Image (cartoon, rainbow, N blue to C red):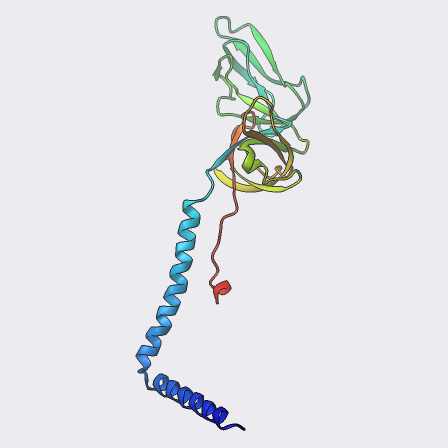
Length: 239
């Protein structure tokens, strides 16, 4: 082996021994402090990423929804009193079935019949009871279809955001069902770019698994919002 190579190896060995000696001479608390600094840097960096992701997250996108087949309202044409209840909560009805008998307030001897507007299950409200006074437009009950229900909905996005979605893609919608807020998956059915609506697209979707949901008023449009996937931090991924 050449003399200069031997000299170089000897120099490297001496340097390595000096580094080992310095590291082994450090106090234990200083080594532990260095480890804490490294851990703090990783955790601090992760927190900064989460904060920045929250600051730059997309605005909330609200959506309109409607249940199909929708519930049919039971109401009266003029101010009346309920004389007799013939069907109670949960009764299965056919279109035209007599639900209750009514009487005229000015002439109680004059009675009329309240019929079911369609086939389905009767859902009554608090004013559906004997001797209650009901007014035109006041819904006293609804008849809900027993067929499988579907939610059809839509939301608007600008063209740039809409281009990130594809027909047939699964999306996540948060809706209020009764007193509960629920998150449920839907399928994007169609993306439409209206000619007169500059820079905006309408995205239509369907949620088919809604039989387990209980809506406070199934005759009204539902409100919800589109849930975007958020960035998450995993310490396992860092280490």
